[in-house]
Amino acid sequence: MVSPPFPIVTLLTDFGLSDEYVGVIKGLLHKFCPGVQIIDISHTVDPQNSRKAAHLLTRAYPYFPPGTVHLIIVDPGVGSTRKIIAFKTSEQIFVGPDNGLFSMIFKKEEILAIHQVTARHLFLPAPSNTFHGRDIMAPIAARLAGGLPIEQVGPSISVGDCIELPTPQILRDPQQLTGEVTHIDRFGNLCTNISSEEIDVFSEGCGVEINIGPVSISSISRSYSSCNVGQPLALYDSQGLLEIAINCGRFAATHGIKEGEKITVKKNL
Image (cartoon, rainbow, N blue to C red; front, top):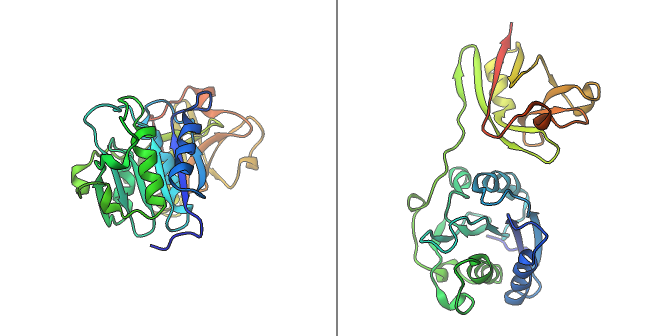
């Protein structure tokens, strides 16, 4: 793993910005790793929503340079017996609670080492039962960014020892794909788990009809401006996944769509 010229730590939390929590974490990162560059992925994950944090992390981490340390603090089990883990891939290091946050990364990446964080001498003194992000995870992430060997944070474990969230599946039959709304972004757009490649294989050169809630869309557009303002459309997002939107509107709020709802793609013969 090649480290960047200056250590980089990313932050992904459900802390919001109205309390001191994010600032405290950043202060500790600088305290234990002077010169660290801190990059915010998001602090507006819905409280305790590990699934949404996993979704955002999976979309973000590939764009960071080798040696980046990702610190994720969405921790509804704080103070319980849930594990805190640190692991490394061929290029990056991840630190956070073992609550399924890393399920998709475990599926996508080769995990070179994974350790349960137990080395109390690396924590802040007298860790609280309500802020492990401050007292345990931030000092560990900072030390790892500063070059601490990951083996020193605690005993080695396996991916099989970690919590796994169910992965949204695509149901396939000759006439229909059924996927799921995996995320609703701040613009009210629906992100799904159906890729452009999946639709290309399924459609066999035919057009497609997309159905979600009360709305049927008969084509896939190139961009948001491909239809009139206020009209619904389907397009592929920046990750190559099917997205449903309203040009200059909020599809989810307009049609009452929630994360987890089903979306279908049919051949338009």
